[in-house]
Image (tube, rainbow, N blue to C red):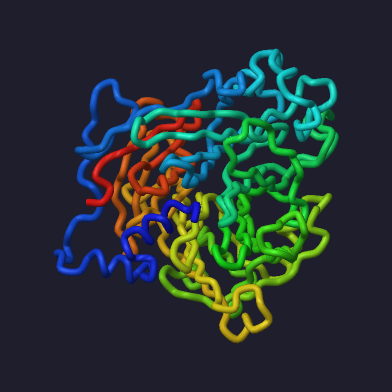
Length: 462
């Protein structure tokens, strides 16, 4: 499998253990008051990150470098996925959250001087007039953990807008998500196509652009992240809106998203229209932590939503509301996603969804999936503005903060938090795209501005 966490678990013989079971397993015989994490951070002069003792980080890719295809590495690094590749190497597919006209950070350089290196037919939206050409998209990288070197890097999708996060698929591709709902003719009238879609990018070492075909049946809205059910191919989606929904796409044929399917939104059975944000003062209406609620999924129609109203229509049908859905990652039999501004303190929440054993099938109503508020931050010592996240090989949830002086924070199954890293070199920029290599030896993470990817290594297995 391409998922780094599943590969790690299979290698260590833990694949049959659930999230909590894994934690109990690794805790067996150890002190119950053992401090989680890897110890205090050790700042070093001149370093970009502050890390625990024994850990180190190196920059493996950064904005403006010349790639294998002769184009420039774009900036605004965001969500990222890792795949097991040939000879034990790692393939990374990375998003670039660029708005139209961001030439200084785009792959073609200032004034798009390298635009003739690609076919215009392979650019999703050139945008009439050129001044607002869309330069968002993805890059693909092959990295050798043993030598610590990048062996290949190329532009794999372009012409899209604000590719924020996404998710890997069990069939070795990356779904990249546009965090916008720009319409044709929007953004000063230059856009030639509608935006707000997902696109699929195959994992391949063949240099060239992916044909930019939007996955329209998955809905047009302000996308953020996805996670794919490893057996059923169902795709779960977050929405980066203050009153966003949680969506599910049930494909007509697993692994073939272009063949269409059903788009649905999550409803909590006993609490229709539940507002999970906990922004109000009435404690009796607050969504509780660590309580599992049965859910159902309701169908949505007119999913290309020319009026950008999918979430409004879903809310009228009783869909649960989440505060700025961000990162999402699949663990063992469950998935986690963040709501970056949720909670009474507005510092963020992480939710856990456990699919039904009949997920997406008619019998689902007899044994429904369940959702819980896994953790809500009540202070900056816990976390703030949780954004992208991943499930670590040892089972903890690892999140990135989107704020000044951002950190990478780990969360144990019992809800304890610890700091993995702190950005001290570019402290005004957020961390994005955390993902472990299939071997579990390397944590890859991005710093969005000025745009760079780092490989963090150390005694993870400790």
